[in-house]
Length: 140
Image (tube, rainbow, N blue to C red; front, side, top):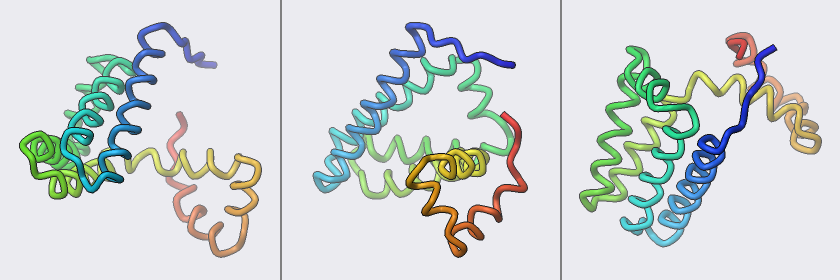
């Protein structure tokens, strides 16, 4: 059994990632405020890097299957910093979906185990959507 050790570096990384998501959310709410979006991007990326480590982050981003997502996320990050937040966020959203598409089946199984949300997901029409991805789940 693999244990997940939570040291101070990982705690700080999770906090930075949370603040990054919060600032990005505020940036979108305030009509794509480029300052908040840029701050959210920087905090989220630094938080992920601290949480999983620099080597693991670089390996994840440089995998051949993730290359398209890495390029689009990086271009989106650049456009947000330069001052074109709407185009940047669209590119970042596409890159995020491509980069983390391998985690969606695991997320679907996790969501089915949450008490109220799990009951909702067990409804026939929604369940068929989630069962479509269950067969592709990679053990973590």
